[in-house]
Length: 147
Image (cartoon, rainbow, N blue to C red; front, side, top):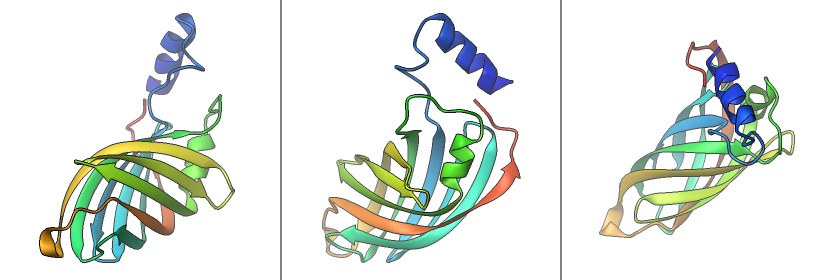
């Protein structure tokens, strides 16, 4: 119901294709070269995933981040986000002063743009400019959190 309500408001004011809330929200923790994450989709599904992470310039550290992602398509139908988030994916991000953004590509070839913020600590107090990661995400089913 929340998803339909959100879209009906956007449709009434003509913003449905120009502006929309994120298609998914992701919580991620990186430790050295490993990552675990937990996305939630606008359709109300929760996911859990993990994989490999290469921070640039220094992989020796830990970080935590939260971000929102938008599928790079004009319209998003119910189920599109769940299909995108499930399975294998890879990403590349850049960051500055805790804010960042990047691109995610799924095993289907679809892409999403992500923005978010995070914090971390690296050995030698170096500042990482971004990261490259990849892994696998499993759909945990309907969480009851939808928008």
